[in-house]
Image (cartoon, rainbow, N blue to C red):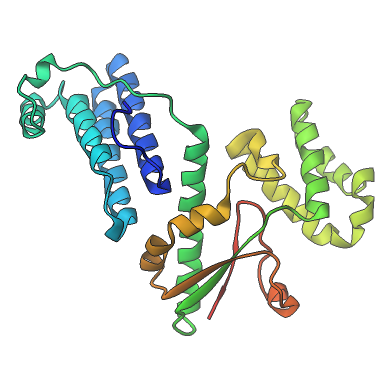
Length: 273
């Protein structure tokens, strides 16, 4: 499944990973005879991934070999349900033998880190879009500075360490735990931050229910700045902004920092102008 030119761009890697993911999920649906879901995975979700890739590629264009591989895989995935259409697409690709004689697509392992990176970008873009819309109700914004945090604050790190230890011990995050958290010895140096510490702990516990143990990571395992820089043109087009600057948290101007929701690893802050 890697017989094409070398893939280097982030958006290409993300799309390649999505193709692998949906090939595997469609195959699993067929194995369970869930044919409707197989079409959703092999057609609908593949098409959505292609559309997003095309939009993100913009003027740079899509990776030709990767797109050809996408078309091949999709034609094979829907062949059991739409054989005539698959045959047409297969012949358009230059194949002389029938699609019925083709081997089922075999792909490599899905990169779970790439999935996280893609999810991070999607969530960040969605959050920025909401904030742009809110800011535009007051006055039109054209520029944004996105602040990325390399590490949590000391009190946040201490809280995450306590939460992670509790989860790994298999203990519940019940009322007794939350009540005892305020008097935990490791949090004694951070009494002044307790008003923000407890909501932070509650949010992280809820996040743990969705994401699992990674919710307690002290650092994210990817370069946020690199991801945002690689997708800069797409972000500006999607958000309707003329200029986006990526900077490290906190801002040099302390007055600006006080006005913003603090950035944490995986959750940037933004300032508009």
